[in-house]
Image 1: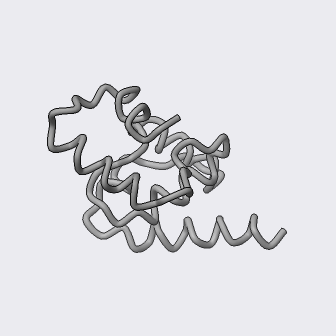
Image 2: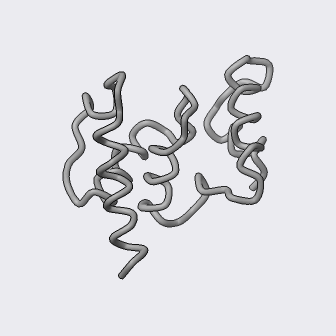
Image 3: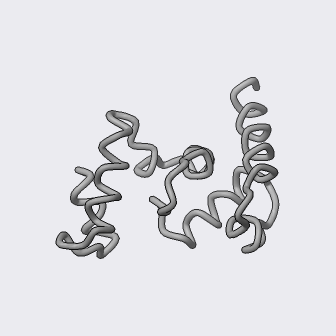
Length: 101
């Protein structure tokens, strides 16, 4: 699936600034199309590490995927907080545990 098709699937209008911004972000990842991965752990890791203001994944999918990666229920305030340092640290730790094993 192309990046353009992915954004259409998310119902983002082609003429919007959101579409252009997200397309630029997706294209910036080159061949690493983590948002299309079958692995919720992969999707949660890369979405959390992404420094852009817009979510690439649908919000509910991101929450669900984070729960899988962290093996716990994730609260809304954790991803909305202005400083996500603690969440990122937890995600990196959970990701590295799987990579090592």
